[in-house]
Amino acid sequence: MKIIGEKINGTRSQVRKAVLERDAETIAALARAQADSGAAWIDVNAGTPADREPEDLVWLVRTVQAAVDVPLCLDSANPAALAAALEEVRKPPLVNSISGERARLEGVLPLAARAADGVIALAMDDQGIPGSAEGRLAIIRRLLQATRAAGIPDEHVYVDPLVMSVATNSDSARVALATLRAARAEFPGVHFTSGLSNVSFGLPARSLINRAFLILMLEAGLDTAILDPLDRELRKALLAAEVVLGLDRHCLAYTRAFRAGLLE
Amino acid sequence: MKIIGEKINGTRSQVRKAVLERDAETIAALARAQADSGAAWIDVNAGTPADREPEDLVWLVRTVQAAVDVPLCLDSANPAALAAALEEVRKPPLVNSISGERARLEGVLPLAARAADGVIALAMDDQGIPGSAEGRLAIIRRLLQATRAAGIPDEHVYVDPLVMSVATNSDSARVALATLRAARAEFPGVHFTSGLSNVSFGLPARSLINRAFLILMLEAGLDTAILDPLDRELRKALLAAEVVLGLDRHCLAYTRAFRAGLLE
Image 1: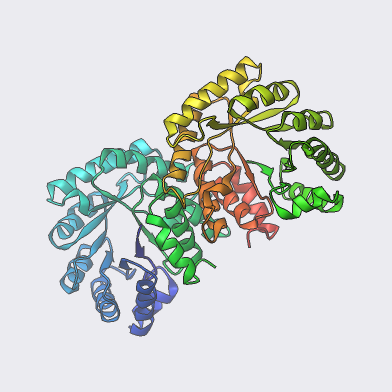
Image 2 (image 1 turned 60 degrees about the vertical axis):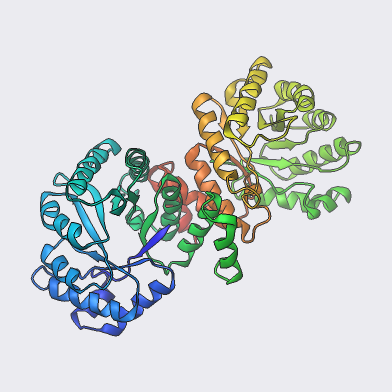
């Protein structure tokens, strides 16, 4: 499982404040901590109004790149911000994200096709997020038609089946799992990712719920996850699940983590 | 998920000593602790040589029944011990276990059919435990033929797909999961159970591995598990997985556990 570190997100108050005040050290520390914890990409989301987002996202890109060597995941629905950020990246990034929403497809997909290493594709469109796996699969089919038409090979597409909170709909995680299994069977060449933490929104002890969901998504075929790499319990659960599912050859990563004291 | 409490097992040195010394208080304390932690059955396994096992198992049955009101799971392959124990039980117990092994089928199945509330059926025979899900499914088919022929309704049969350690074979858990899914599709009326802890034999931080496996088995259709109900982390993982899979209506059990401080 590859990890996209989620912590540099302007919807978090600490990050929002750092962006507005150009507090580079706070951002750099978040980037370093996530890279040290194994993040393969660092997500950067400015979360500021559209008129200033290009400038803010460029500042985030420069600040994170000054701190770590890990590629970025540019997290914006704003074509102007993405275009500006893509001029700054030193390594081809992921673009987070396109969806079946017309504005995103028309505005973001051409940028991703031209300059990104991969694009995250959300199973939703202008009508919202379908309640059924079949509805989401229909959107995923249209998204793959669009990425292929734009010249993006399937192995550069990261489909997110989307998960809603189980607090409001007890079927939410099962629908995400079913969407993932069906899409993986139909599109074996694409990657699958998920922003996990929505699943536990509104519930207490959220990390416990996130862990159980991550383990189940891994079995269903998730190969990339957007999560907090500093959540030690989540990383322990992931290491254990990789052993159980035969994804950790000779249990090497697990026993190495144990010897390093990371499983305590 | 219903729990069979596994702690009163003569292979554990504390229990072995208590059985040999007729230390009723140790056994009663283990029974009470497991019942208080939600065990639906208390497994009793004397683990002593065949010639004294009937007497030891009867003592265990009497001792546990004096302490708790929960039904028992009589854990022996010895027909003489099971027959003696079945004379003592106050509530119809589970019998643990039959398998495709000829001696068990001939010796244990008639006793289970006559006096038990259910019987655990292991996916192995005189040739051992098949390495493939197909091989185990073939045994499960023969076991169901035998239980039906003995007049046991499917809903009183608890099939255990068996899991070996992932330390020696990285495919072990996947084979157990595949066996469970296939058997459940073919025999929707039976229960499915698993002695989970084998999966982590020989590995460090075993509880982490057991937790991940329990979550995956729950999704695959496990409805009963043989485990240590005093393992708080395992119970937390199970409560979270039940929420994720929509098995905890309105998240009531989870939020109740949170308010009781059990998720900390």
